[in-house]
Length: 248
Figure (cartoon, rainbow, N blue to C red):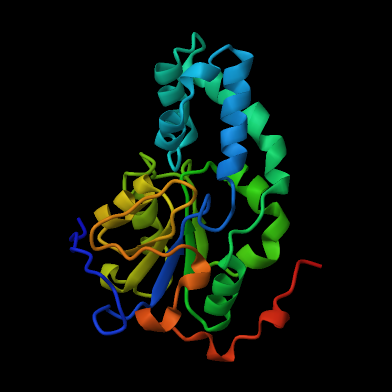
């Protein structure tokens, strides 16, 4: 069992230097929140449940696995469908939209910089592998440099976020030694931050459209505002934004 350490407010004078980085996917790298909200609203409208799908309910299901989403929506919106049937209905509506997802501001710049600087980078997401691959399809040039990726339906992952399972697995899979004290997670959701903290990792929060704040967790408006050197990572000094390429 890994020791859970208190996360103090990080700055260039107090943070332990970061050697490894783990990114969340939805809402952190990819701007998928609006896509999911559209799918939820479309399905609720189809079954006459629009009035029950409040902003509070929508926010409640952000950053959790699909089956948990279905269970929450079934309960909160009083669906007669089984949770499995509702998940299938949501999948049918959301999957065609994945090809249009965009990168979050600053994501390409930061990831490209870390990879070119030799920093080991991994992905840990509550998304199932099939859906995650659909979302990432247009940005293979960016994700191909990741050390590894951990998905909700991977073997050995018993629970999604806020369980720390995906983060602990991602940390274990780095080929070189990775300490919880020197591993930094980028997250956008409440459940994601809770999962990272439960794993004992350093974490920074980049909230999506839902305002969030945690005591002792550094928060940035976007990845563009993150300063790598404040965490012991290589600075952007030698970064050439024009050299970012797209998949050929």
